[in-house]
Length: 106
Image 1 (cartoon, rainbow, N blue to C red):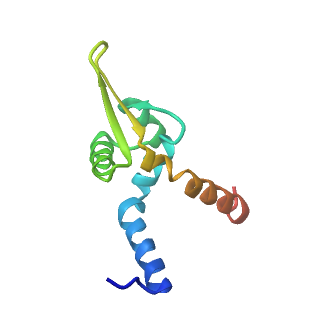
Image 2 (image 1 turned 90 degrees about the vertical axis):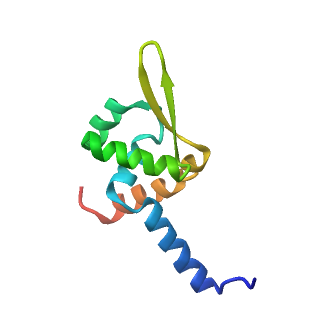
């Protein structure tokens, strides 16, 4: 199979990124988990999402290998954290934050 020309490769990469991570809720949840492992209720609070939205998006992110779920028995609690694949997005968030600082009014 021949390699895609650079322009097609870049367009495909952006399209795949947008389809996987591009929604507001995906970005908010990934960013909230960037530095911490959080319980479901903590994620609800930090992202200001509804329980149904949070549950759906966490399922999507888990299916995409970006977020891992850990359940504790005592006390009963469910924790979420980024996987290695999810942590690899740190430079993307750094770039978004830098761009926002430079180009958007606070």
